[in-house]
Image 1 (cartoon, rainbow, N blue to C red):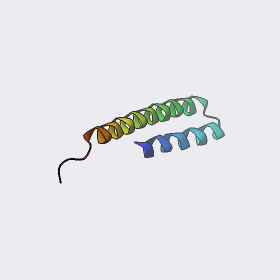
Image 2: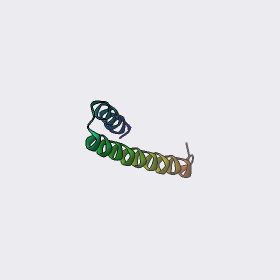
Image 3: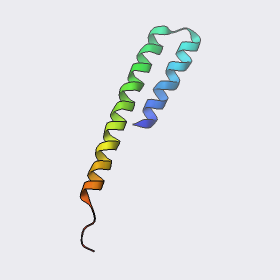
Image 4: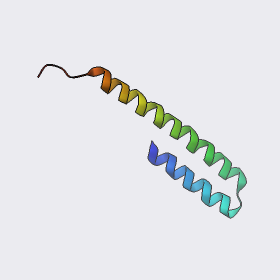
Amino acid sequence: MLRWALIFFIVAIIAAILGFGGIAGAATQIAKVLFLIFIIMFLVSLIMHLAKGKGPV
């Protein structure tokens, strides 16, 4: 997920440099959404891991 966010961010930078404002804006928004989803999934995973605790060995 983070990889895709970085790819869209790079596409947005290249599109902005070349003057494609619409594509750059769309790619930026996609990168933001993907990064937000990544952060939410990471936090849920972290909370689930901490809540699980240590079981009997």
